[in-house]
Amino acid sequence: MHRIFIDREELYDDGGSLRVFGARAHHMKNVLRMRPGDAFIACDGAYTDYSCTVTSVAKDRLEASVISASQNASKKDYTLTLCQAMPKGAKIDFVLQKATELGADEINIFFSARTDVKYDEAQQQKRLSRFDRIVEEAANQCGAGAISAVRIFKDFDAMLASLDPAAKVIMAYEEEKTTTFKSVLRGNNSTNLVFIVGPEGGFDPKEAQHAKEAGAVLVSLGRRILRTETAGMFLLSCVSYEKQEEGGQE
Image (cartoon, rainbow, N blue to C red):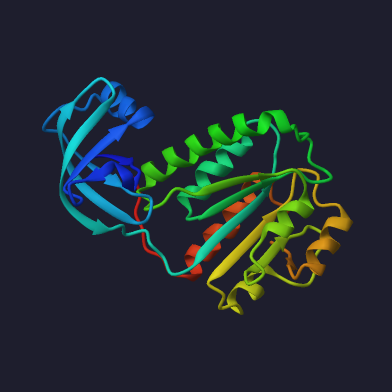
């Protein structure tokens, strides 16, 4: 069954009806070819799913009746934030898609000292719009109850300063030889976890020091050095395993 995200403001008639506008309505009408009588699931982005049936299709909108509402099964009792240094090429698309599938509530993209891609203020809004589309599509595909929030930071320190002081911040650092991610994760009871992953060239030692001064724990991910687009997925997957989440495959 087709699934879409909606804005809560599109619900009316005390939640019994739905009007979808804009790009989402266009997608439903012209891509999914939805017509009156077709059933679909609408999610409000706050972990409530609505079983709906299309009642009418117009030029600028699609209308539906709401049959029932239920809590989305992906809701969890902890939050995950992935802070990812901007990688080269299309790797960032992979990171955004897979991090969303693996339960990241927020994805912070940052430019660090050794990032090959340079920060360009003029490009950021265009990039952010594309990133938002990627995570919404991924959230739809995996049945998530919310769309991962994406933010872009011009440098490492700006990203660090934005983090919740109460969060448990864990940074994958290739020069760390003694503290393992396994030991830190299993000894932690925080419900607000933040993971930091560096670029292809690794972190500058000054960045590692700044992270430690900000309260982050620097960890090793094992004997093998993972690619930047792999490291974050490893971290998120380990959390899902430790939290004993159950799921399925397509």
